[in-house]
Length: 153
Image (cartoon, rainbow, N blue to C red):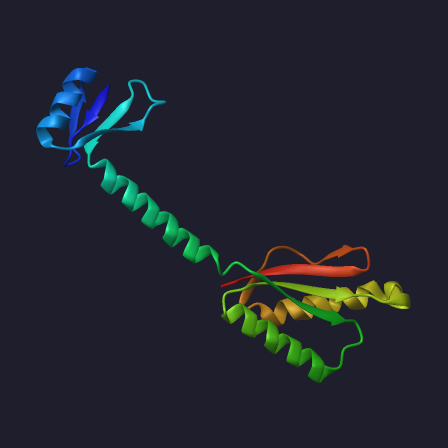
């Protein structure tokens, strides 16, 4: 097996018994790093310290993934200018708080005949949010709703 010393130096390919002796002399543990490689790689290190650092890293990763909640802002095709600005400001607020955002435009009744106007409104929304977020794709029509997701910059 390939042995790595406590300070990170390569000690070469040694027998298991010799590696165990070297670990005992250093007062450390023999930890398997990679069992799939040929020969297997082991390292002389403190196993308790390794476990502690892995738990600490997992906790830090969990702390960063909490902010990946999805918020949604809904529009309709015949929205007034002030209502539009209010919803855009709300969307910008979500994005500044590092939330992912889903913008949905719902088509009701005969509005389905004016899908071109709906897509124009979605392009306007995408343009207004461009400085705060990146769109995950183009707006897509799913049933009676047109939606697009945004990730904060």
